[in-house]
Amino acid sequence: MGKPKTYAMIETPKGSRSTFKFDEELNAFRLSNVLAAGSVFPFDFGYLPGTRGEDGDPLDVLVLLDSPTPMGCLVEVRLLGVIKAQQTDEGRRVRNDRLIAAAVKSPSHGHLRALSDVAGSVLEEIEHFFSAYNAYEERPFKILGRGGPAAAARLLAAARTAPDQ
Image 1 (cartoon, helix red, strand yellow):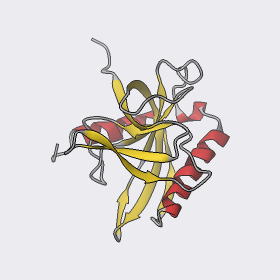
Image 2 (tube, helix red, strand yellow):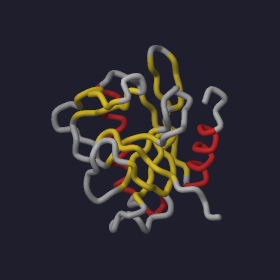
Image 3 (cartoon, helix red, strand yellow):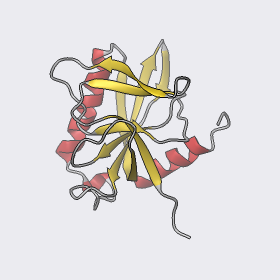
Image 4 (cartoon, one colour):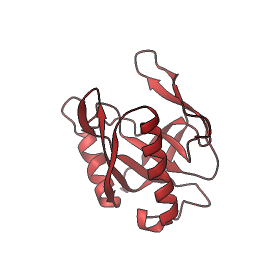
């Protein structure tokens, strides 16, 4: 039996200025926010179903894919690593790491195996996007570093076995 597949639920497609979140109570996607003029998501953004991170939300994931996928689409992904981050929300500091994954079916990114396979300039742009997005929201956000596939797998395992699941 092979390794279990990992799927990302896309909430916000690449190129979107509007951000969406899945509302578990309503069982529907809702508009969460609108980014500042000139800001768009650099890649598809969503979460890993069946997980819960330190911030109480499912684990965030940015999916490297050639073109935007629709909101609500499940995409099989390979975890490449993590951008480690700390966010201050309502006076409370929490880790709010951003997993980075490649869509398995992506012609341009499907071959990637680790963050080290991603161009440094692309990773810097991704980090800048998350920093700028949070600054616009007046929410302190600090990049703490990066981790590879093993670090991402540990985060996923811990989030799947969280006691409040």
